Length: 101
Image 1 (cartoon, helix red, strand yellow):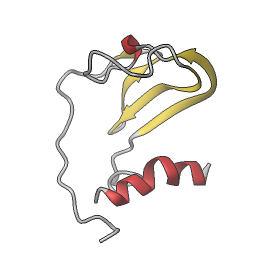
Image 2 (cartoon, rainbow, N blue to C red; image 1 turned 90 degrees about the vertical axis):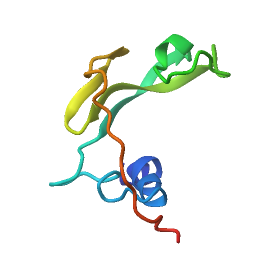
Image 3 (cartoon, helix red, strand yellow; image 1 turned 180 degrees about the vertical axis):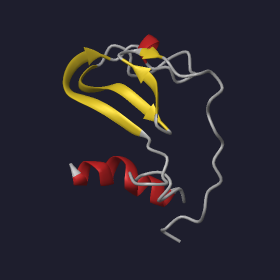
Image 4 (cartoon, helix red, strand yellow; image 1 turned 30 degrees about the vertical axis):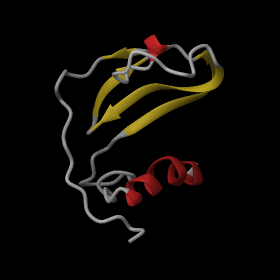
């Protein structure tokens, strides 16, 4: 689990200068968490992605593993295929220097 978190969250936050606010869990951090069902098998569908584009080149590709709940700053914003967070609740983040520099 620790390696999965490093590969999917911590390392990206470091690269983009957002660590430790993003990419870690602890007091004073944002508490962004995605709950993942590694056994959920389904085809990718544009309608399920909620990413602001009107297409995906992966339409119809069968995959195993899918996010089922997303928590941003301690609030549930996505649950079982539905956006449930408040519209406009996003936040622009100032970032520091990448840890690679």
